[in-house]
Length: 280
Image (cartoon, rainbow, N blue to C red; front, side, top):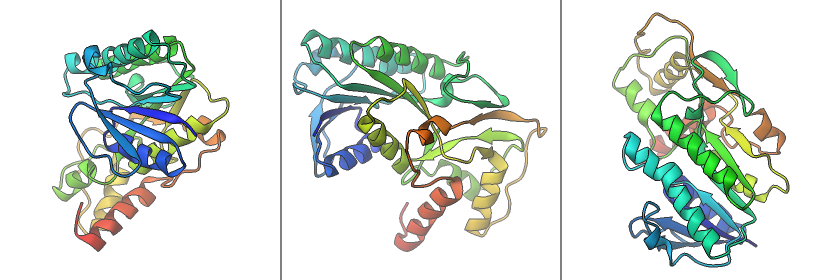
C-alpha cells in the first residue's frame, strides 16, 4: 500500500483521501490551516507558498497529488499557488531525497485557448491567453521537470455537493448563452479519476478529465430548469458558437468508468439528495 500526500487537501482532496484510505493507503492531507479530514486522513498544516513551513512533511512518500487552489482570482495568487507552490514542494521533497513513484498535478482545461467550439484533447495546442491557464500550464511544466514520474490532469468545471453555482443561476432566472459549449465533471469523479490514475501501471503524462457530455450552456440550464419545475432561462448573446468541447477518450481508454457520465446523472443525483435531505 502507498504513502500518499495530498497537497491542498480541500473538497476534492478530501474525497480522494477517503477513497485512498478505504483501499488501504496511508494518507496525509496538507492545508494551510488546521482541519479534520475525517477517518483515514492524517491532517498536516503548512503553507505551500512558504517552504519553511514544509520541513515537517512525512518521509518515505510514494505518491503526491498537488491539488492546491489559489487564494484569490488574481494573477499573483495564481502564480503563488500553482507554479510557485508546486516548485516549493518539489524542491523540499527533492532536497531530502524522496523517491516518489508518482506526482500528479491537478490542472484545468483553462490551459486551452480554443473558443470556437473546437474539440480539444491531450494533443491540442495549449496557448492560454488568461493568467489562470498560463499559471496552470506553467505548473504542468514544473511537474514534468520534477525528478519523478509525473502527470497533469486537466479537469473541466467541477460541480457537486456544495458546488451549486450553475443551479443557483437557474434558480435566480439568469440568462444562458446559446451556442456556448461547456464541460464539467462531478466532484466524486474527480476523486475517482485521481485514485484510478494513481493505480495505473503506465499512465500517460497528460489526461483531460471531463464527463462524456460537453454541451451547450443553454441545454444544461434548460434541463436544470425543467428538473426544478421552473421556466426556461432567457437567452443572451448572438447565438454564435463558442467555448470548446473537451474529449475524454484517453481517460476512458485507460479503464476509468464514470460515476456520473453526464450532467443529467450528476445534477440528478445532487437534486435528489437535496430533495431528500433539504440541504445543499
